[in-house]
Length: 295
Image 1 (tube, rainbow, N blue to C red):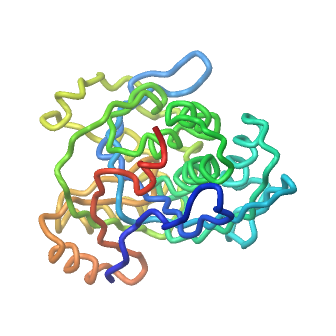
Image 2 (cartoon, one colour):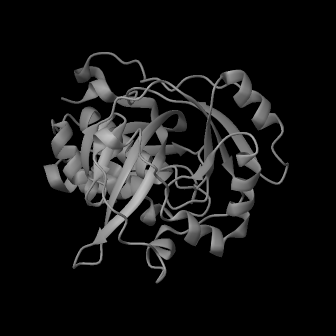
């Protein structure tokens, strides 16, 4: 099914703005994901390539003068106090000493526990949008550092471009990639990231590569074997998609994806998806729709 492209909302002068509706929070793919080590504090050292997609959630923000931050709609399975969106808003408020608040509506499209960055992208959009609505004036680099406190995937959405990532995922370099169509399949299971990273048999010593070698290197997702062994439906989805195009899991799962040569091929594959799963055709975007909101 065709969807409208994710675009930044239109608005008037900053001084007159009391709402920002339809703020996009795009999904991402990990085109590969290598675990190259582990720090003394237990965090894993990674190398990955992030690709942003024209597919995602949207969020609405309404200015409040009383400092209260509320999520005004239900998100199934996510309590308001635990929502990264609410935590992001409160973190920005505390960091800047802002006295303003916001009512936030989260319109979910992306499957949760899918490895496509839904919660992290929602948090990043919250930081970027409220930085503008509240006129707190933080730079892109400052917001990326703040976002890292919420999760390792948050900074790349604030960075706002396809990226080669190292460290725990926060050391980002822009990555020039040609436009592409993908098929993304959700096998109907939710894979907890912490469970996969804590697995005793996880590979943690993949040899690092250089960004220049990425396109020519033999790369993989080191988390895939663990996720597939614990959630066999992920492996079944990979096997099905592999019949049509080389398939891989993204992030810590559960979604799997394949690059395809055309929109027509993406349509053909998604229409043949087994009914117990969901499949989407998606296309890449060069920059986050809110990229121009930051310096």
